[in-house]
Image 1 (tube, rainbow, N blue to C red):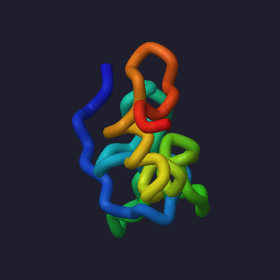
Image 2: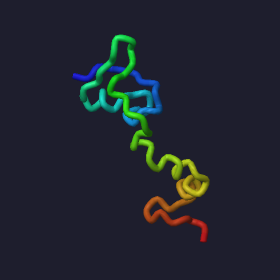
Image 3: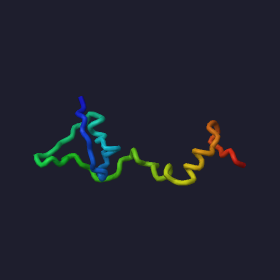
Image 4: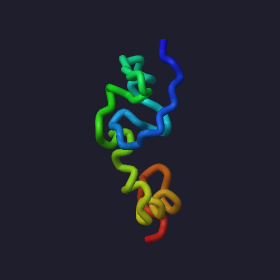
Length: 76
């Protein structure tokens, strides 16, 4: 059973939205006596892949002007 553990280290590959994905997936997490995570892995979570593209103006324009069925823009 996973323990509800909040994480604030966004430099870890396991970090996603204040959660440790290892914790959510019920994988082993080791915390040392000083309270630091021994299973820390530097990097960016793959959960954030594509976020920059979704934040771009063209992606937002397509999302707000697009045809929901075809994905084509309504203005031609």
